[in-house]
Image (cartoon, rainbow, N blue to C red; front, side, top):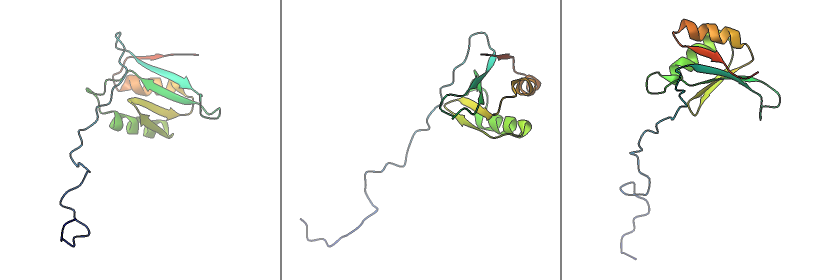
Length: 109
């Protein structure tokens, strides 16, 4: 023990404020197509459309997700480099992505 009566100090600590920005790894297909998948697992039967295969280093996924959600008129999210859009209107989503100059395939049944 020291003779100091210091109770609290912000001078030192274990929290490092310099955190490196985490890069998002996205699944990119060799043929260059973007895939639209439908998934219901773990969602209590509610379906979502997954937009997979967009390169995160060439496109701003957050901005693209916002555009897609607003044009579709539905909610959604961006998780691990995959854009999730609520609902099941894959044809409309395909048309919107093709208008944004993407090559699109509908995957799954």
